[in-house]
Each structure stands twice: as C-alpha cells, then as structure tokens.
Length: 137
Image (cartoon, rainbow, N blue to C red; front, side):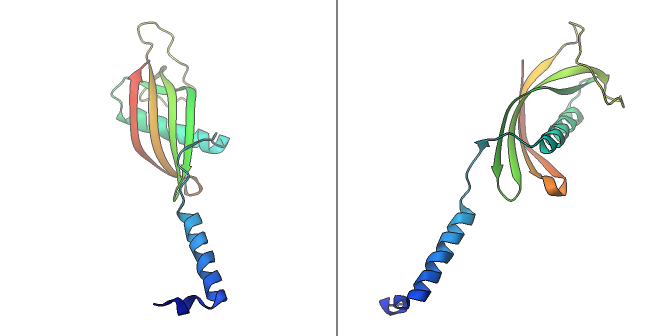
C-alpha cells in the first residue's frame, strides 16, 4: 500500500473521522466520584443488602446504616464501587417487615464497613455482585 492511496482528501478525511470515533467509544474513563440517582441508589443498595443477608449466617438481618462513598464507571452497563456502614437490625432472617430498626441492645449491636463492587444494567433491572469485603466497625 503506497502513498498514492492517501492522495484522495475525502478518503483521508473519512479515515480520520472513523479513527476519532472509534477512539471515543473505546475510551473508558475509570471510576469517578459521582452520586447515583435516587432510584439507582435505592435499588442498588437493596440488591447489595439482599446479597449480603442471603450469604450471612447471622440470625438477624443487616441494613445500610450510612452510605460512605459511591463511585461509578460506565462500561457496557454501570459499575458501582460502594462503601457503606451496615448494622444489625432487630428483624430476624425470616421477618417480612419492611421497617427494621437498628439493633439497640448492647450485646446484639454489630456493624461493619463494607466495600461492594456491583455491575448493573439499571434499565434492564439486572444486578450482579462482583466482589465484597467487610470489616467490623
């Protein structure tokens, strides 16, 4: 392929535009400190707590006590890195209550600081927990 193929300025312009477009779509920005929309936050945190409680052997359910940090990255969906403080509630695992107050009895109080990495496609109501780790608070 010689220099002759680039003599046509229209062909050169089309190649440059195509290269710029492909570069734009393949550039991932990485995780950024951005707050989630209220709807995405509520559904993502609910998914995280359901996942945590399903995997836990604790007699009581845990719930988010405080959202400490939220980062997001756009990929084929949305990836969230979320740091939360979770606390044991007064509701037992088999409870169907929608309102579970945080445990107040000193012997039963327990809290963790947890990091979650979740992949979601919010417009399809799809969630997948990729990683989580918790340390006692």
